[in-house]
Length: 458
Image 1 (cartoon, rainbow, N blue to C red):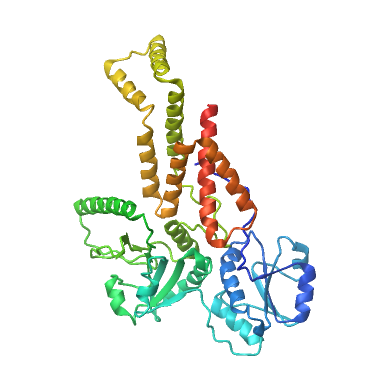
Image 2 (image 1 turned 90 degrees about the vertical axis):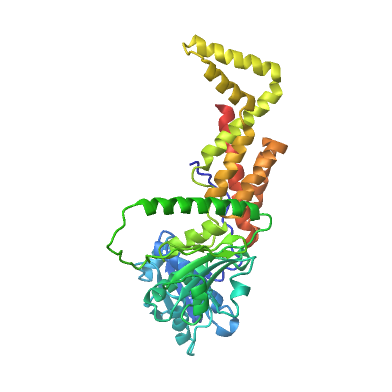
């Protein structure tokens, strides 16, 4: 796959309330006290996992009444300084009462533990009140989970469930990745208490995570077609499975897998199927699932994935579509008489090379040629591919948007639009909720333009 690298500067979040320190400001801040500092490196995987939780912590204590500074310093950039502070691993979090007195955080890196740690040092028993996870009950289920404007990831949990407690930090970190205007809700419901909803959605174990997609206007027919395709594939798989020899020995369940012995009919949110999350209950896997099903494509650090909108295998189909488009345009420019002449020359060249042209071959060539080649068929193939591979509507609509623009306005418009979007992104003035759309559009445009230029040079 062609990797389209974005050449714009980082999109800075106005929600970033973690104070960025350098050695000079570190000394000033620590002298004032009430300072929590995270020492990290950009190459550290655990540091990246901690980032959303630490950001959520900064949101908790943003009110001036707490008189607390939540800060961080990049030890990859200030390595000598961190060595002087006896930092021998990452991430390390310390509470500084003054420039020389500190206490190191040594518990599990959960939001609740951090809140308690800070609360102990500001002279109060801090009861954790803030969380990015939305609590759902039977009286707000419809308003939150079935809200047609929101993509909702809902975890059915139970207080006694050890796997639920183990998942909680990663689930909390996932909730901290997305901004309010991303229209993504990371939610949780007590499946023990609200057993009616548990039964309604065929939940037979905890934790069970379900995805309730947003309803997109104008996208109903596309999703119905996709749902029909999925049903046919499921029916085919069911028939194949039924034909296999049965096994008397029962499979054992694992932490990340439950064996369901009964058929569970699909549940719907509007016209869209509620999907069950079957992956690992870990941050990276849940983030990937949420991005793929919402089309937001945020990274751990809340920035947009640089390859957002680029689908595995799509470049080859785009190349074939563009090849059809270019041949169609050239045919229109040459005119019918020149087309016939070129076709005759092509056949003569084959005969000169010793290739025997049979009647069947001639019919096949004429069929391809009459389509110049079949641009409409290639367009349908490309859109069908994107429709099946990409669940989010925004990705599908972007490909459709620029296919139409190419046919109506030509390649020069796409080139101009790519440059314009590049300038907008580089201006670093894009609102958070508009970032995914702009990056996806930029990537798809660049893919089209890059392949077009390659084809015309060949």
